[in-house]
Structures are given as structure tokens and as C-alpha cells.
Image (cartoon, rainbow, N blue to C red):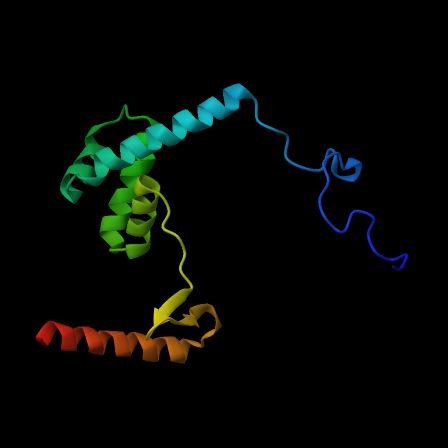
Length: 142
């Protein structure tokens, strides 16, 4: 063994005095409860307004001057989503209502072979996408 190796085998040990005071302070019970309440209220509002038509959302924004800030933020987001036709905004809404989807960077291809998509170039990804589209067309015809 050399003298350069760490004394604790490089693993984290509780009670590290060097890190004290450098992290985010822990939340109090009241702050945790407020965050949970806000998150739950936000999900409830998103679920409520997501089923409305764009006309209903815009009319509600224009006619209701006594809405909470959270109501207005959700309605404005849904209105912008409709105006811009943004799939990213829709994904964001669905992720916050139903929970985040796991990010997938590997696809199983042909009998258990895996392909790591994060290492492919844009051209390779475009070719794979076109192959999938072509295969779906073939499957739909059959």
C-alpha cells in the first residue's frame, strides 16, 4: 500500500467536518408541508384545466380577475401551449400531472442486442427513425 491512498477507501463517511455549512440547509417541517401542499394543489389545477377547450381557457383568463396566481399561471401556460402548438409544453403538463417518464437511452434490437442511442450521431438516429417509420408502414399494410 502506498501513502497516497485515501484513508477511507474513497467512500463517503457520515460526520465529514469539511462539508459542514456548505450545503443547502434542511427544510423545516412547515416548509416541507407547504411544498407538498403546493405540489398537490398544482397537480389538481393542471388536471382540472387540462380538460378544458382552448376557448374556455381564454374566456376564463379574460373574465376572471380574482383568480389566484397559481390558477393564472396554469391557465396562461395552457393558453400558450394551444397558441404555439408546442408538444414540449404538452409533455411538461403531462409529466407534472402523471409523473415523469423514465428517460430511455437504450433500445433492444433483434433478439436481445442493445443499442445505446446516446452514442449515435444525428444522422444515425435519423436513419433509425426512418427505418422504424418504414417498418410501421409495412405493419399497417399487413
